Every structure is written in structure tokens, then in C-alpha cells.
Image (cartoon, rainbow, N blue to C red; front, top):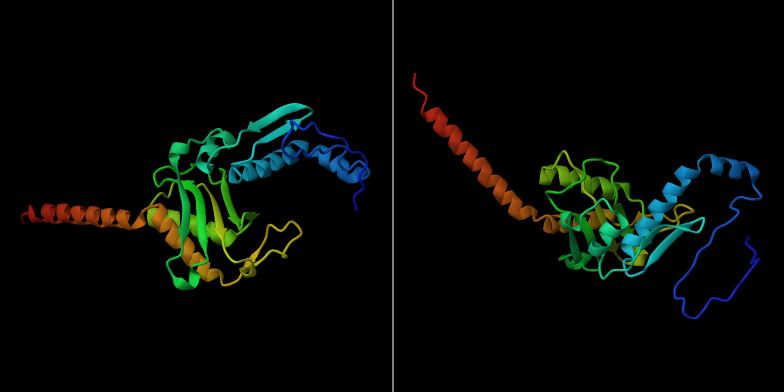
Length: 239
């Protein structure tokens, strides 16, 4: 249970919400000691969480302070693509593409929509630990290992970029009745009913985003050219 210990009025000129945390685990000395021992690690994890939200909710300005010092100030933008390099300063928005809204063409799945940003076919990350790799369901950040694996496998098998890793921030919008969020206290682990159906929609989304059909044509043409050269080389051999 929580108890309000202090309240104060905010000037009318200030707009937004301020979250202030102080004396964390002050009455739990064992947890406090463990927290202080892993302070840098905990702070990095907190920043990753804030950055994840900052990328998705691009129309909200976010300022993070620690000991009254600004750690990161992220202005609001008109879209996620513009917000990307402001949140993750080492990334270039030119290496990404944004899909505004992808709807399933199947009448049965017409209530499923996917939108977001993801790496362009020729610009993946060199490390598997690179960020962002974010999946939201109905604007809620979730952990869907099956979907993450599907994106990675599809990137490597269909795209052919085996030395790189895709980066993405995607939102899957489906009926609330299809999602069970009461699987873990943090609400990050969810169960999606009829998951195979939505996996098919995700594959269709990736095919369109990465233009797989056109790339397949290019692969076939390349194979044909190699085959022609091979046949020609055999034709010039004399015995």
C-alpha cells in the first residue's frame, strides 16, 4: 500500500506529468544494499524502458533527470521515424522505413492492423543485442519471443542478410478479447489467442515492408544469369 506524504501545486504554465522517485527501498535495507550494488545496471535498464516508450509515444516530450541533471531530453515529433535518432542517437533514420498501417486482406483477420518502423533490407544491425527490438500489442509493450524469432528468421531466410539483425518498433492492433495480459505481474508477457492467424498477418506485413516479392524476382533473375554463365562455360570445354 502507498501513502501520500506530500503534495504541492504546479504553476499553470507547466504542462505534462512529472514522476519523481526518492529514497527507494529506504525501509528495506537488504534490497537497498542490492540496489546500490547494481545501481549502474538498474539505471541502464530504466533508461532502456523509458527510451522504448519514448520511441513509441513520439508525440510526448520526455525529459529524464538524475540528481537534478538532465540525462536525456527527447522532444516530441510528428512520427516515430523522426523520433528514432533522437532516442537512439547512434541510429540514422535513413536506414529505416515506416509503415503507417497494414491491414490483413483476409476478411477473417480484417481486425488486425500492424504499424511501426523497421530496418531497411540493406541496413540491419551488426550486433544481436542492438536496440530497438520492440513489439507493442494494442499500444502495450510486450514480450513475444515467438514473434521476435519469426521476424529474425524471416529476415535471414527471405532477405538473405545473414550477417545483420533487424531493428524494429511495431504495434499490433487486435481485439482486446484476443489478448490475455494477466500472465505476469508486470503485464509484459501476454498470450494471444489464435496466434497462428496473426503470425500470418505479420509475415504478410514483412513481405510488403521489405518488398519480398520484387526481391524474389531479382533472385530468380540472378539465378538464371548464373545458370546461363555456367552453361556457357561448359559449352566452351572441349574433350
